Amino acid sequence: MSESDNRFPPQKLEPIKVELGERSYFVHFDEDWREILASYSDRKIAIISDRNVASHHLLTWKNILPNAVDLVLPPGEKTKCSKNLEEIYNFLVAKNFSRDGMIIALGGGVIGDLAGFAAATFMRGMDFVLVPTSLLAMVDAAVGGKVGINLPLGKNLVGAFHQPKAVLVDFQHLNTLPVRDWLCGLGEMFKYALISGEIDFQHILSGIEKCKPCESWECARNIRKCIEIKAGIVSRDERETQGERIILNFGHTIGHALEAATEFHTFCHGEAVIAGMAGALFMAEQRRILPTDDFHRLLSTLSKFPFPTFKEMVTTQQLVDFIMHDKKVQRGRVRFVLLEAVGKVRVVQDISDDELSSAVTFALNFVAHR
Ligand code: GLY
Image (cartoon, rainbow, N blue to C red; front, side):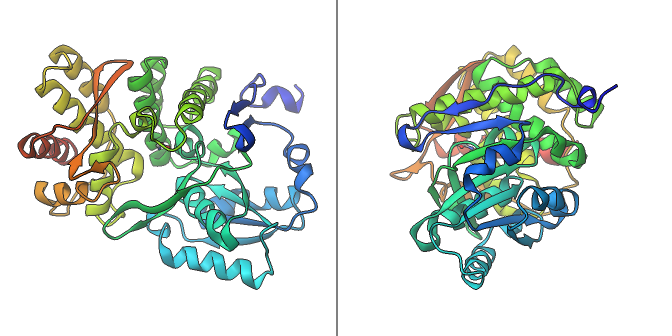
C-alpha cells in the first residue's frame, strides 16, 4: 500500500471560495502547503500557536516555512485576552515586523481569533493565514473574518472583521485532537445541522458515541459542508448587517454568557453553545414556534453530549446580566435566534424578561443536572 492510500480523507476535497470581492479567499483541504504558501515566500512570517498544538505540529510547519519565527502561548480560552494580544504585538516589534509581514495562526478558535485580531490591528493591519487545528475552528471560527478577544465582562467584546488570506484545513491535525475538543466541534456541527437542515444528524450521533475523531469520508464531507454553508452566509452578509449571519449565533447568546460567568475556565466554547442551544430550543417550544415533539427529539440528541462537572454557583440573574452586554443587544433588547424546524430559523427581538430568565434557567439545569 502506498503512503497516499493511508491518507484521510481518501479523496481530494475541492477548495471553497469565500466570495468577498477583492477580499475573497479560498479554504483549502489537505493540499501541498509549500505550494499554497509559495507566493508568501518573500514575506516575514510569524507562526502563532499554543503549547498543545505546537507540541504536535509546530515542527511540521517550521519545515514548510523554515524562515518563520514562532510565538507559543498557553492553551485555553483565557489566552484570548488583552495581555496576550500585547504579547503578540511586542513579539512582532521585537522581531522587526512591519505591515508587509504575515501571521500564520496555527491552532483552534482561540489562537485564530487572537492572532487574527493582532493581524487586524498591528500597524493598522497586516495579512494572516489561518491553519485551524480543531474541529470547531475548521467548521466555524476560521471562516468569516471575525477576530477578537474576550473581556472579563463578556466574550468577544473587542474585535474586528479582518478576513484571512487563506484557510488551510489539514485533516491530519484532527488525529491529535483531545476527545473533549472533538465533541465541542461536533456541537458546533450540530448547530449547522439545525440551522441549515443540510447535515445528517446520524454522523454527529455516531461521532459522539465513538468519542474519537472519525476518519470517515462522510466526516470529511460534512466538515466541508459546514464550511460551504458558512462561506455562503459570510459572502452575503459579511458584517452581520443583513440579518443572515446572525443565524450562525444560534445557541451562542446563552452560551457566551455561560462561558463568561464561569470565567472562561469551566466550559469549552462548544459545550457552552450546546447548553445555549438547549435554552434556545426551550424558548422556541414555549413560544409554540417549535413543535413539542421536535423539541424533545432535538433535546434528546443534545443530551448525548457530555458536560464537565459544574461546581460554580452561577445564577440565572448573573447569566442574564452577561447576556445584556452581548453584541446582539440592540437598544436594550436582546436578539435571539430561534428554531422553527430543522433548516428554518427566526430571529426575534421581543423577548420578555421572564421568557429570557426561563430559557436561561432551562439551559443551566440542562448542564447541571445530569
Ligand atoms: N461564529 C459566528 C460567525 O462567525 O458569525
